[in-house]
Length: 368
Image 1 (cartoon, rainbow, N blue to C red):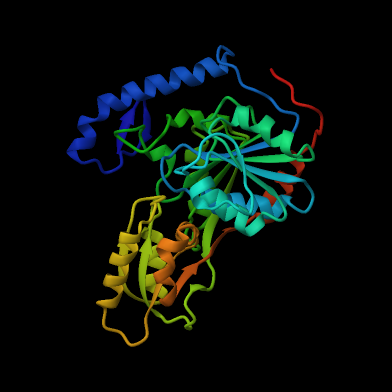
Image 2 (cartoon, rainbow, N blue to C red; image 1 turned 180 degrees about the vertical axis):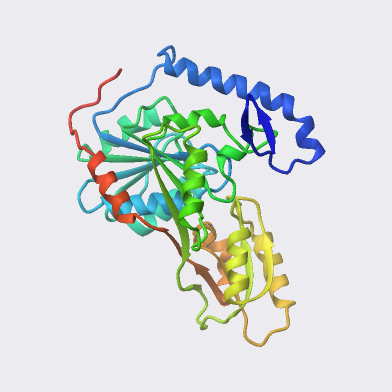
């Protein structure tokens, strides 16, 4: 434990390299603080739209459960509002604005937007665009009936002013214990949690106590506004679903994944199935035919009469986009684990607060 200006904070375990990078982190912090200050004083302009815009994001680089949280928002809002989800389309092969259509896949719009489109595309609009301030007018030009827009991974994208700013923080990697890049994993310093209207602590253990929650809230409110609501959510794994092959699920599983933090995924599988091995790929990995061939070689080398491959829903989305390159995989038993986010308590309060905050204003776009 360290003290700075009479305040306690905790350094994450840092190898020597991270300590050496600390001066660069201070430079990065200075640059991001200046950028935010210029937005705060109006020197850099932010666009306001007369649609209800919800920004979902984080301070921490890497997975904090944004995709299942965005899906929770979709489920909560799609019945009452004409809804759209706008993402950057990370690692897609296209550029500029693109409205998702039946001809698209993970290569053309990105894995997460394609997952949204696959599950909800007949009920909502899904679009991608690097610059949200330019993409939103395109989105509304294509469908002027849209009432609510969810901006995926947009906490740092300040060129658009959201009506509701939701900050996610991973319980096992809380932003208030971390430092900015490259010494830590923060995209901007902790104090910028003050922009959040709601904070959701994700990936919480189911056994989290009321005392634990109060301690986390206290740490969050050192940086967030004191009236900002804090909710606690966990990840629930659903029953394995068949992706290809025609065999029944076997508890002897060989994992493969390309996600930011595969530890909890592996832990769940290890506790509930017979884990034979885990082939890990980088986050948002674009699988090649060679990758899949090596994966099958690993799988076939394992001695088991009844085994299967198991992965995440996001990975399956990317593999299905390969079409011809992945065709040989179709003869193997491949399953995926769907996940959903749930609140440990006060889920009804979250839904009520969300619906109270969402006010539809279907006028035309205006600029600040």
